[in-house]
Length: 260
View (cartoon, rainbow, N blue to C red):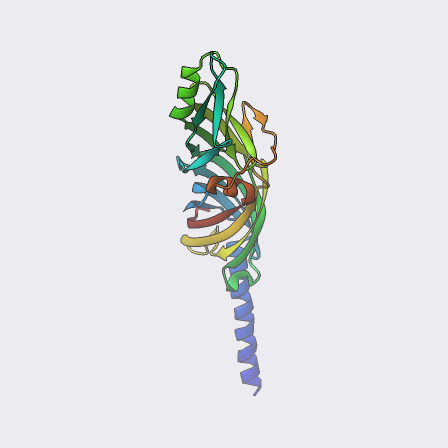
């Protein structure tokens, strides 16, 4: 019996020694990882380091490449009446204006990933924030109908607007409209997933899903926020997106490597 207890004691000491060696090898601020990712934020590159076996800190740079959504938006009212030289009014019925957006942008993420099971499992919860330019989209469009109204009535001083949500965006005399959509520059983030930014082997894989809290979208033209108008419609799909979309969904697949 004494021999059996002695052997068990040696085995326990060996297990503790191996566990300590494992912690020492993985380390606290002793390793550095790099990663390459792709997802709803575009293409990302990043670096990370373990704080403890339960916590990692990572920094990513994300590049959103030329994604360009488009849609039709309403013109204000069903048309416009322009006074003629003989005192009569000539009505013009305007079709919807086709508008395009550009979502190209760069953001910087700082995240803290918590592993509740330590080294036993790579499931994680993550929190942090994203920093980026406030302009998340640029808008531009053109209406041949509006250009024709101004061309046929060069002395008319009236204006014609397109409607996005409850915003009136002025269409210039060439029939063009330009503006941008802005959100908060500081955007908190929460997420979860599986995989380590600094893998225990040389190479690893990580998947992450979360939400970025970007706040309400605001529409600007000529660097001025547009006033909210009453009873201007805004029933098209693009308007609904701008009115309701306050969080940005994040899904990211990453190839990770331990370089130190």
